[in-house]
Length: 483
Image (cartoon, rainbow, N blue to C red):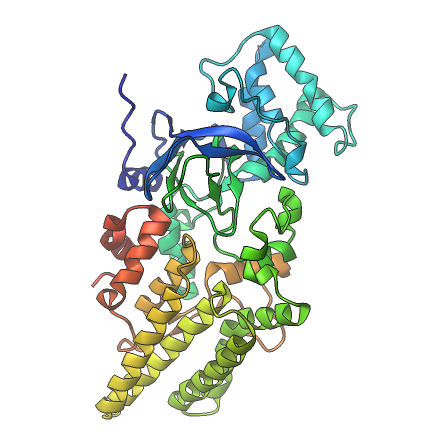
């Protein structure tokens, strides 16, 4: 029997925009499960794979608007009238959970064909009452250490444990991935106006659990990309892979490893600095003094916005752009002298600097000095291209794509990662001397890049984020920056 054909990425995104659940048959690519040193379990390639090849297409087992909601849905699927699905219960209880070391899960039996079909959803559901009662006994073994209310009813204890399973394994992606991107590309003022006019346009977080995909481990330099839409996950190779190579995803493509460590993500997933890349992750090899310097680099976008506001209030806005661009250039140069230049944290400040210089070019041209304006515009474009050329280390997150979209909009704005860090910090309040995290500076209409000027960078971003370069023009149209 021929393998089912996968839906196109465009079809997946269209389904997500409509809130449609695709009735797609799972496609399990050339992968097998295995025990991986220091990581518990993982999925490895059974043969060589080319960049862009489909590795896995898997419908979601369950989803929810929160971890608690997802856990409740999982419990409803497991529990059946007069019994329950013992096989599924065993599968869920064999998943790692939040706060557990990944090596605490059961090893993969590589004999008897288990490695090929491990953790796949079985249909129809298992209805063997003895199997279900046997599986229920596993809960005490996996939850005894973290469940202080062990005397509570089984269903309640199960749901509490499933919430930890959801936190440790669910993928966070809105139902409409493209709509969410378009939303974040808007300035805060436009977002507020749209939310007031039609609250349904505001993207909400959604959590999805995929059994087989849950076996994939994280790395800072991922070799595969993922996209959730239409209630399925599509995973493709981000580069050529050899047989026996472990498939590695980025659990947090929009923040770096330093942020992940600072906000407890490694502890929650039971990871170590070594298991996510070790010496190959430069921000984890810095001295304490240099780590603080990296923190200061990440503050530069907000500090620049605060300086722009203060300088413009004193008089000539053109002088404000001159002053702040000179200050930002000096800050970046000083940081580059002590930190690795390819750190992702440099992306936003470099691209921000290019936009400031582009604004200066527009001002000079408007004042009649077209020669200086042309020179500044070319300098700005070179800086933008250089920023993204240095950001090509591994698959891009939506953060990088949004930096390009902001530039095409003529808007200076921090990427969602800055908003995420502010919310984790508490209430979204900025540190002393910084502009609020929710800021946007509208640039002059002349101070914008043309999509064609950055087309190679846009094509790479679209290819890495969505897996199909052909989606570039539809994405630009959806995000309001098409020419």
